[in-house]
View 1: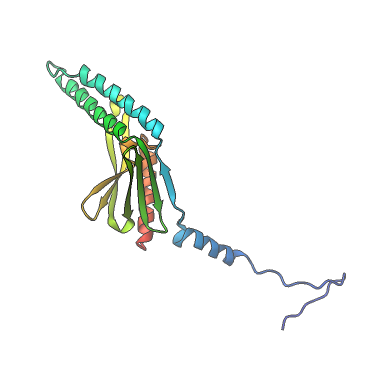
View 2 (view 1 turned 120 degrees about the vertical axis):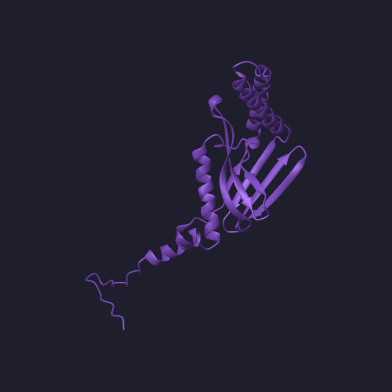
Length: 200
């Protein structure tokens, strides 16, 4: 039997509330999932205006390099060839990015255990759904040439079908695409999502 003692003022001592620790812990678990892992989805959107501007810049720089290094003779043949190929690469990236210029939205949803990539451009809207269970491995892809400060990093998803899907592809010019540490941080976070979904 619980005994309630009266205080001098005539007010009884009310039973103290139970410690909030277990309740808070339970709520945190519901929000973050097992092992403190956040179950909130994370979303990325490409900048269509920046994409158009950078694609035109790539076309311009690529054209200059292709024209400037088009002669492969003499002692500087190796450097000329490297410059020509780099210019050709920039041209391809710039032209492809300009043709498909639009907004790309990437949503990683740990609760639904999937990645949804939506491409919206002048040709319409295209969606791709990749389930965590389809991904067998992730890595960092790279396109560019460090000597001229042209760097594009992205995440490569290796799927069970054998396909290698580029997430944050260079032609989309997502923020952080030129910083390897940023892309590596996203890759590790995605890896944690996949492992958590698999119960590891």
